[in-house]
Amino acid sequence: MSKPIIQKVSARAQSEQTRTDRSDISPSAIFPPLSADQLAETVREIGFKPSALYVELMQEVGNGGFGPGYGLMGLAGGAANDMGDTAVDLYKVFAQPDPNEPSWKWPQGLLPICHWGCAIYSCIDCTNEEAMVMTWDPNEWEDGTSPTLAIWSTEMPLAEWLRAWSDGVNLWEKRSPPS
Image 1 (cartoon, rainbow, N blue to C red):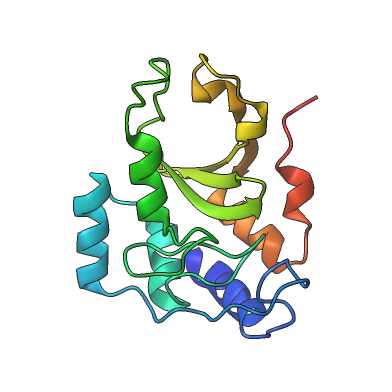
Image 2 (image 1 turned 30 degrees about the vertical axis):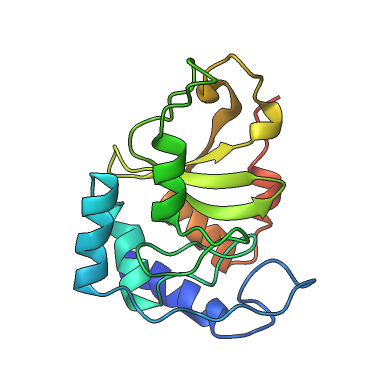
């Protein structure tokens, strides 16, 4: 099931014009494929194995630098967001307690993978096989509350989300909270 999705994503990623959704920036480079050592480092750093489909995508197409928004962030040693963080780095930051915000507790296994700008991220829930895609929008978060109040489901599993992107669907429109 994953091979057709990976092939479609790879085909779109090969063109600089369609590699990401951001035509206003220089095309990013696709990082070299995720190695076994990088995967082991990822698991060691975050304490869980990311979605099997995400790992396969990073191993087959490249360790980030393509995809929706500004592009998918890689796992250990992969593509980073505009602040220099890979998905692993950002998860580790989000998972840290904040002494100034005692209510801060990032959901275990919710891996940020795609930056949209304005600190908005698409994340995958690695606690379930479907790897449901969730949106984290800190602009909807209020100090003193749980971050989960600013996280909502796109109601799309990762496979469907990637297929939609490779078909040209504007996933920015799918990231908003339900009305």
